[in-house]
Length: 173
View 1 (cartoon, rainbow, N blue to C red):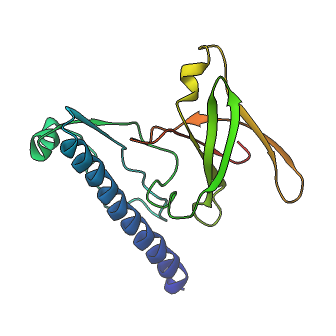
View 2: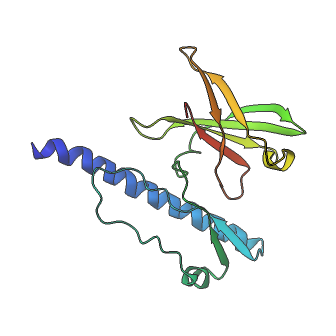
């Protein structure tokens, strides 16, 4: 009986640790690139913690000034994301190159399923930030159909992915 709990728990825990390790690599790459480009500040994403079966030991997420001193550059940490950026870009994107408005193009998109039982995510890369071309009272929605021809209309939520012009949403939100 204990194996019915232990095996899924261990798999989720291992997956979570692997994801956080990759997120750390991504954060450090962003910091190194900012330092190499002699920027005053590096903008890094906060950690996304994949789900596990029980709350237990976790990382200290307190972002003190000591981190900036350690890395030798001012760090700005974005709000926690709603998808695992360590896995989101492991797949080849679909090149779209479609104009949506005012010289704003969707360059490419990534589609991936985060984990079993969790909704599919679609991440768009733009040639420039669409918010710069829209007034503050305008919301962006994207409509698409899945294989079963079910129509989805999704409001796009800006996900701050440093050094990339991307917007993400969960399919079916």
